[in-house]
Length: 84
Image (cartoon, rainbow, N blue to C red; front, side, top):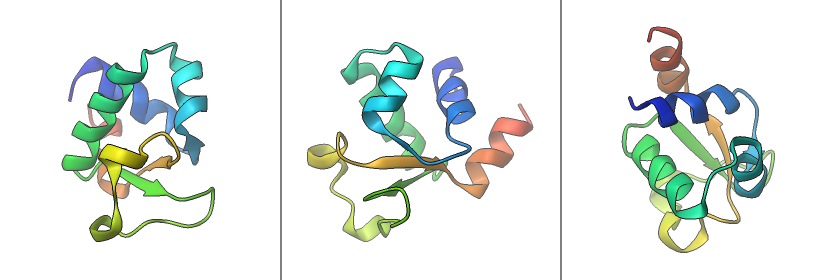
């Protein structure tokens, strides 16, 4: 896990929108998108359509909709974050 991925997971203990995450971490959009994509591939992050509706992995369209998704660390992501 990269330092940036660690910092992102640190913010994902609660559901947060892409825009709020980008502002909170002061990141460029492309940098955040790339890191979230990596975290998704590692199953460290879950995507939500809003603060309460999780999107099943097979229905994700991350490439086109990453800006409108909300994010939350998965159980695996929290474990990896806390054992680093």
